[in-house]
Amino acid sequence: MQVTRTIAEFRAARATLPGPVGLFPTLGGVHAGHLALVDAARAANASVVSTLFLNPTQFGEHEDLDRYPADEADDLGQLEAHGVDLILVPSREEMYAAGFDTTVHVGGITDRLEGARRPGHFDGVTTVVLKLLNITTPDRAYFGEKDAQQLRVIRQLVRDLDLPVEIVACPTVRDPDGLALSSRNAYLSSEERTAALSLSRGMGLASDAFAAGERDAETLRFLVRGELEAEPLVRVDYVSLAHDETLAELQGEVTGTALLSLAVHVGMTHLIDNVTLG
Ligand code: PAF
Image 1 (cartoon, helix red, strand yellow):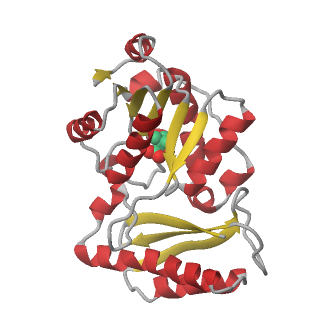
Image 2 (cartoon, helix red, strand yellow):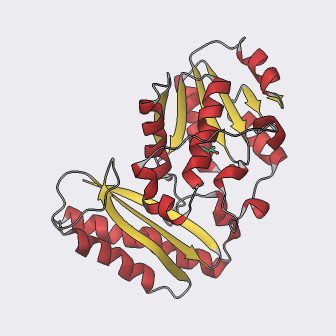
């Protein structure tokens, strides 16, 4: 794996790679969920490129930028072992040179869920993702379904700006007990980790009820909320049952596919998860 630190160096190496090229961009804190994306990219493309950049502009003032659990040497080792050919590990100055003053804003969908609670977060994501796509020029880019809203926002960015890239979504990877893999799981104490299992349990209750014919949106949300609220260490930020594409909150009878998503704090740790119903 060739490690580059400047955009110019990356572009020179990228020009020599056979296509099609798959991109896996990451903030770091690489885990098996990320590696499943790399494996999917490896299986479908002649070359795999990656970017490792802890993008400060997608973190709010009181969020965990300064303690984000990323270890560059470990991340690079894991990505190399999974067949990444070329990676860009830029500094903040390389990505945001003095005078940088452009923001890419996707409307509507970013006002909801995570966007409503983390002002500016998706502007940070879409601006850096557009930069990374422009720098790496992949044929396909791989994102996890765990970040369900991010995935939809990026799809809209690509559609609206006619970006010549296919966005490929890969399923959430879970520990055997149901906890969705996340870099932030590293923050959880063992009691908090046990409490965090209520996320997948709650979603399981709603999925089972949906499979058994329950279609009332409020009842389905209530089932999840009840499971979460039974855990004293869990503070619910939201439980949403929304239109699968627009993420507009559903009321009354659910028809068609819906996205059940939730965000909580377990202690100080922000966790999200989701499942598609229907
Ligand atoms: O999902 C992530 O890791 C980040 O939001 C991304 C897409 C790499 C942008 O910084």
